[in-house]
Image (tube, rainbow, N blue to C red; front, side, top):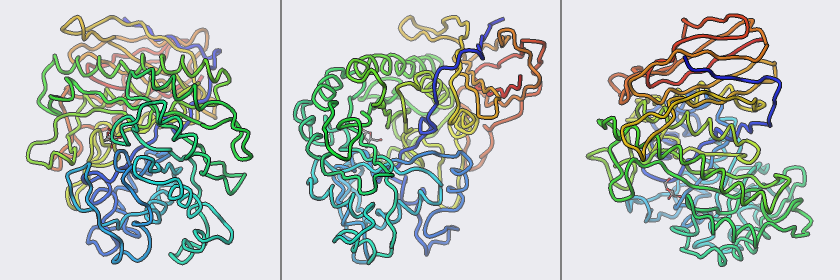
Length: 503
Ligand code: AHR
């Protein structure tokens, strides 16, 4: 018997809904074919956006969508993606397969997608190959509600009113594809570029995100914060140059040369993957400790705007398209990361899984007019009940399991929150691919009046396919007993559960 103890008396902070954010790049079939098919497509769509995909994403209550990249962002020139579609410039997508990008999905289309999804906007600007003027004009184009060259251009292109830009990224991976900069140089670039990301509407402050480190590059975080965290004294930036600093970390079973297969993996690779994903805990803790020194009041968010699994691409697909299948292993990766972000909600203010559709750890896969929801989708479907809640203190007893010493993992992993109606939400993952465990959830002196339980489970490489789209899905869990201050059940091997508890 393993105990999970939740202390309803200890409330620990707000879980920003944006922790369950998503990322969509002009990469492979994420935008084109994945969400956007164009108005003339036979695939049912609204203003070019696939109805099936939008409906599935709305069900997840996706809070924010990052766009247009990724590496693509630092080669993207926004003016190529506005105006009459037939006369938009075509370009080569040098990062992703060298395919022709026809720019038919641009700023107006992105804003329309976010409108249909009902989510916040997160635009990533171009520092690597763009200019300060270009970035400044993009912000003016999107957000200025007055008379100006860019506002007039927007109106001419059919949008009378400005949109809301909630977050703006000042470059992406500028230590790599975004310009191969050293941190000192990027810090200066950040200070300059962000100065011209103006807040035209003081009631709709654009939150500025600095490019943060690649995984454990703590020196990058230290240098960028040291140079950029201070109050600028500018009229439009209440607490300094930056509102957030990003962190990118991908889970690869092996390494960048041989990543490992998305399906057909063995038990050893299962534990390697889960132990690699658990490294996120250390990354968030250590980067947060650096930020704490510069920002003890927690005004700067750690924005994990790229995370998820990265495997070898599916055989027979374009290597530059990063298309991979998604199994119960990905479901566990999602659960573990979302639990980690919940527990660090005092500093992690947003996280964006990579990527939305058909790329890396996608929640949705499409093939022509068909669409399937992946195991990762179903985990987000259960975790959505944590959005906007208060984190509640919890602890789960666990034992280390695995096949090799360097890849041992705890058998259980959890997080708990309280929603606005006073209900508690407990999410618990069983990291063992073989063992089930008897559980007692203890509520420290509180009596349970009712409990509802959901589960996503299966064998470790179970997946959904276009022939069998519902092999993995959320099911109701019935064998859950509430007795006084305890809830008892058995958590099956390789599963993720969500309990909704009323005291
Ligand atoms: O998500 C795929 C790529 O991974 C992004 O374009 C880049 O930012 C990261 O290296």
